[in-house]
Image (cartoon, rainbow, N blue to C red; front, side):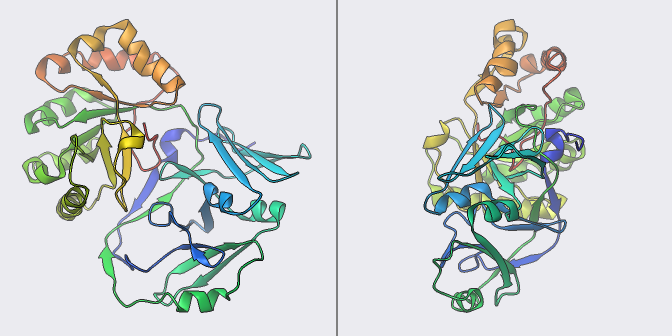
Length: 353
């Protein structure tokens, strides 16, 4: 059996290349004769010689159901009398005949991605690819009910308007659900960022800031990334969704000019279901906030490192004031006692809460 790769390696590889993307009309994945409705967030991905599609796309076909449990570490695709059950921890799949096969399993956008061949063969589907008029490889899943040739379908969606996006995300490695937690520093002052970096050591965290205030952090952004942390955007309470997206877009232009990176994640303290969806960005919910006394409380430490992950919540925030920072070292030493957990920054593939 292949060696199990840790969740830290299930993060996304960020390649820095200018990619012309057709924002309004370009689609990467079709289901039958229609564009995959979630394509802007969960696209078809070609990476490392692999062609990957989001597992939930198979639920678009009549008679197929897709269910996933991060707590149990499983993904089930089932039809009337057939199924494929994926073990997310070990990278294997089981079919209705009891056959177990090793397979690659990926995460992107909080969802499981698979190579489609085994699923198509099992349930009588067809997977095909073709180059769209914009020059990008595009994929389609069909069940035989399609009415248009794929190349003809793509030609009908050609468009000349495009925008240059300086990033391309690709997944690497197997997933190992439940073996990581994501500490977040919500809206820290610039001074607090500097001080926190010096204390955190190898414990990866995410610094969540208001995108409108990113220029205030110009002196610290490079230090954040150089020390293994990431910068994400903080959605504070009720905001104008269009304005917030505009602020994140502008912040990304500035961030890329500083460190050659962009961010596609925004954090809210609302329940995940209540966070506004913003096209092209990934929402994460963070409901557990720890202040100074919590970092030395066995009850709160147990909540953050055991009870919350057990229920599927891996994100928590830390206060960043001087008094609280004084207990960071103690808090993260307690984390090291949990052998199945690691502290890692947020990625698109991370838990939504």
